[in-house]
Image 1 (cartoon, rainbow, N blue to C red):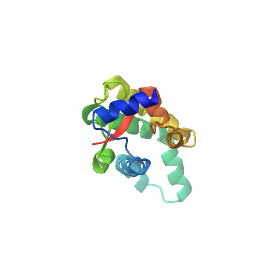
Image 2: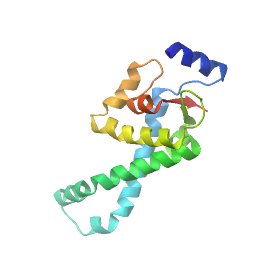
Image 3: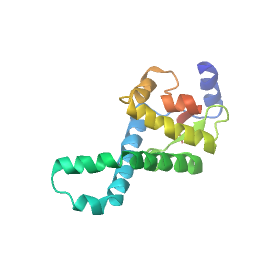
Image 4: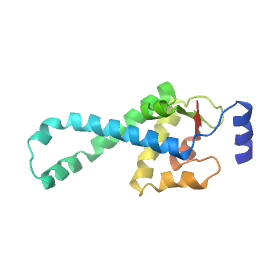
Length: 149
């Protein structure tokens, strides 16, 4: 299967994105979603002063933060085939079977499993280091690849 994918990518003049590009895109996206989250809870953050209270406040909004990340990832991958971080790094997500931008179901699946990958000590991301097509868990479940554009 892996060689078949490689051959299809070559025939379409596509190349898999490097782990480094994906890592930088990840960092940019995490900064953007974190900044958005801080804006949303800013009023409440101003009311607490000690570090323990800040940690407790943020923990109270864990589900909301995960939802922000899922919505961000799903919308951008579905609409544009890439998040803002991926656009900055000139990489995109494509469906493995069609090499087109993901359908909504694939984008949502990828976003949800991305959260799961993060929750399990980022093992889903590390997985990409050891697969020929650099597929993380969320790429495997959504049947997607990340390519240079």
